Image (cartoon, rainbow, N blue to C red; front, side, top):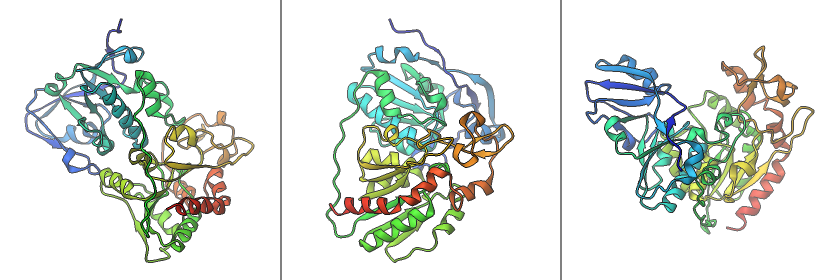
Length: 406
């Protein structure tokens, strides 16, 4: 028998508004902006941007509670339910792009299994444009009204999925994990071939959200030089939302040819998604765009350092995987860390950069260190990233082999 619902892990804010309102994140497509619907009550995550920076300062808004929890279906009953003809609201644990790509692929599989299911996602946040690629999905970027909530038969909290508590330090593959939890097969993958056009569009996305996964500037420069000699149309995409972008751009130096375009960043995630879909070939770090490529099966190479390429790419073979093979006294790549760690006395780094075992790095940093962050992505990368510099000739040769097939 299916288990009875229980409270969601995360708390939500219940609030009322006397005035109509609308809200959308600046890096999400404007078509996904949300508007009020005259409901008496609305719900948003207690830790969301909407709650922290907006609601408290808007006249006519009254916070009812910051401790509301939805009644959700227990994890051990997900695979036992028949969702045919049902409407299901999924609570999204976070809006990290890679994780949300995996969830979007899972939703495609869920719709394939239960063709008449109605799916909604709450807390889609910055990843709303990714979920918009799933046909027929209803996106609640940051809030849902009581009237909208009544239309759903079930609520599922995806943070109950095994491994989600540790996803910041030990990456998992959400698509495969969720398909297994619901007992459904993933969607079939279509093979996308390299175009035979004379000038290939090659996108290089070297920056990740962590210095542990950002490609060394020297590697990017040498790959770009090689691609220039092959008459490719090259676009290097940086991340203007990251504080280290200017330092990284300076380390790359000016473009070495007219066929190279450097983009500081896209205004919205939707623009980034469109870019990935338009490219003929990608050279990417372990980052959101590497995962976004799965949605289009864009060919290319994914270059991995601390995280395991096999785990992150899963069944997707559109990207050829290159894994750093660094090995030191305290760690070997891939160690599994997705973010930097900190010692009890505040030193920030990883096992290799600090020369310490993992037991001496119990926590993620509580405060940022801008100077350290800039150094780690420019002149003092962590050892597994530095190791990639020795692999430059082999990486360039591998890319050349791929492009020779076009």
